[in-house]
Amino acid sequence: MKTVVINGANGYVASHFISNLLKQKYKVVALVRTNKRSPQERMKKVLADINDGENVEYPNLKVIGYSLCDEDFSIPRDELKRIFRGNVDYFHFAASLKYDKKSVDEIFSTNINGVENSIKVFSNYATPGSRFFYIGTAYSCGRLDGIFEEKFYENKDISAFRNYYEQSKRFAENIIKVNIQKNGLNGHIVRLSQVAGNQKTGITKTDYGIFDFAKRMFSLANRYPNEIIRVHVDPDSSQNLIPIDTVTAHLTKMVEETGIPEIMNFVAKKSIRNSHIIETLNRLLPINIIPQKKLERRDMNAIERLISVGMSFTESYIETDLSFDTSQRDKFIHYVETGPSNNSVSKMLEYFIESLSKKRKKQEPAAA
Image 1 (tube, one colour):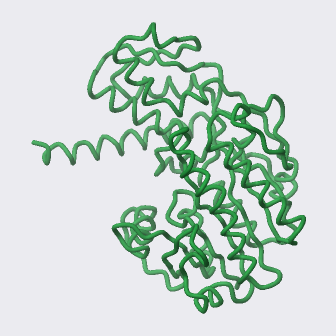
Image 2 (tube, rainbow, N blue to C red; image 1 turned 90 degrees about the vertical axis):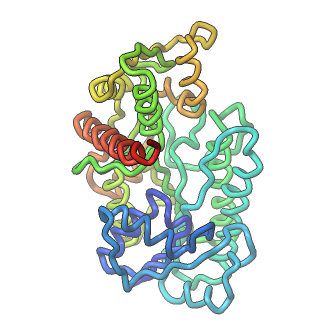
Image 3 (tube, rainbow, N blue to C red; image 1 turned 120 degrees about the horizontal axis):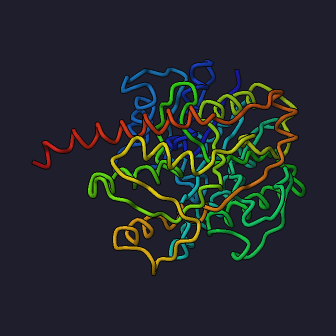
């Protein structure tokens, strides 16, 4: 059975993908950055969290520390030769999720230079027939007016995007395009929309996107219970959410199959209205959130301004109704239902808010 090498392995999507691969008995090499804890400790913790706190031994998993932008990832050459020996699928997940101008150097270093170095390492050590998969974002569409097709788009300046994160991911796609066309890279791009929780169980381990918004509303409700809060959100716009179990199933199928399209948009067929998200939070929290499409900061009260500052990233997406082409994805996957229903999104938010409540209760005695 082939080896699957994954960088950024302890991230939300990557770790769930690894968990699914290990259940299928694939051999996995997880590349994880070192920080205060070792790569092995970091990977063990995230996999235990996926398995409800249970520490499971995985004989098919090897965790290796690496540095994304360093030559050879700061991994000895003999080790790299062992990692890439035989039939390998390499998945590049590593990314900076920052978005603001002050972080632009870090964003571009990780999301552009890191991809260039990743391709270099793969090209130097992978055997013929091995495949390079880049995990991008469906939001590299930027401010495109129309359907975002499964094709390459030219680089544009920052005015064409909502933030530097989107721009950096577009630039990275075109680095891969050049390497496919000029250097024969066996490369593929998977664009993910906003990855949510498990649509079957409701279990949600991410605090990104709508769950970041939910966390902020949870904190606000506990500080100012029963307040009426206006937020700068268009209730009629939508969020394109794709469940984590759907994503991992799609990615695992890519490992299993050949003839993978060059670019696929892994997005939901049907988006979730902002109004449903707000209504669910109003039901779950002791607060009354009122979404308003047109709400200027000068018209906000102190609490509303506070929450608006915290929503500086989320606000970029409060008026989106994006359209995505999925023709290549549909040919490959062979079924069309990929997104959560309103009920499953409510279940995710219920799980997420309950998790925050449990965590807060654990912290209260310590604070006292």
